[in-house]
Structures are given as structure tokens and as C-alpha cells.
Amino acid sequence: MKSCQNSCSDSGSESSEPDSKTPEKYEVATRRRMAANARERKRMQGLNTAFDRLRKVVPQWGRDKKLSKYETLQMALSYIMALNRILTDPRRHAAPHRQWLDLQFEVQPDSCLLRYDHPTGQDFVQSTLSYHFDPVHS
DNA sequence: TAGGCCATCTGGTCCT
DNA sequence: AGGACCAGATGGCCTA
Image (cartoon, rainbow, N blue to C red; front, side, top):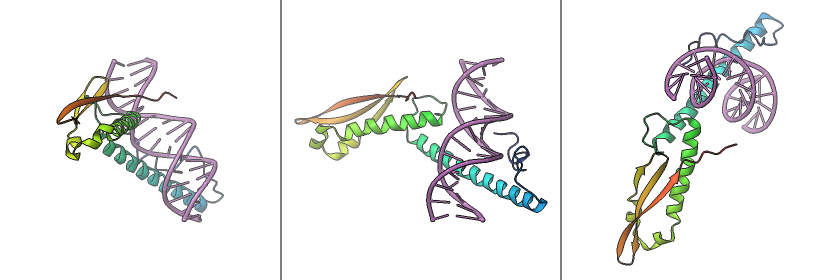
């Protein structure tokens, strides 16, 4: 993405001069900085990989554009809370487990619908549970 | 062109 | 001492 990645950046910092009294110390400091930069890049790549994995298991609202990191976290939170509401639904205890695994998603423009079956006496009735993308404003 | 999003660099802090 | 983590700064890319 960055045009100057690994070229201008890894050459060390020119603006913030390392405390180097001698060329040797300067070189050591520069080498350490470059190593730290590389570690930081790797760390952030790991973080981004985790975000990608999270995006894959979170509803995408039917849009082709991928969720931003912030949206991904908010969506994951809403999604988990919605699933938790289903799992804690008291009607669930009367149903075979498999029925509660038959979840279906329906994506709306600004919300998501979870469909699932629950028992009413002899029969099963389909219920829906909607949840909304609910960004937290700071 | 402005604003949003992102990658990268950097210095500080904490931990092993 | 060195690595991990974090937050701020900076600059590039993309879209409305």
C-alpha cells in the first residue's frame, strides 16, 4: 500500500537522530530501530490476519465492501450478543439441540435477522431475532 | 477536494 | 537488554 514501505522507512530515522556519540553507536541504534520496525510490521500483520478471520465469521450486511476494523469489532459484538440471547432463550431447553443449530441469516440494509425453530407443545415454530449494527459513540 | 481508512515509523512503557 | 505492546504522527490510497 505504502509507496515508500521498506525503502525510505527502513533506512532509519533521519529526523529523530539516535543518541550516537560515535558512528559505531549510531549504527547499532539504527540497526535496533530497523529491527523494531520489522517486528512492529510483523505484529500488525498478525493483528490484521486476526481481523480477516473475524470478518469471515461475522455477517457482512450484504455489501461487497469489506468491513473496516472498527465495524468488524462492532459487528462481532452485536453478533455475539444476539447469539447469546438465543442460547439463553428459556424455550430452548424444551427443544432438541439440533433444532437450535438450524440458524438462518437474513441480511437487511441496517440489521440482521436470525431465524430459528423453537417448540410450542408438539410442533416447532419459527422465530426471528433481529439485531442491529450498533456503533459505540465515544 | 475532503474525509475515512490504513500501513508504517517512532518513542515510551512494561515485562521477562 | 531486548521484545511486546501501545498511542501519536505522517503520508498514501480511495471514494463520495
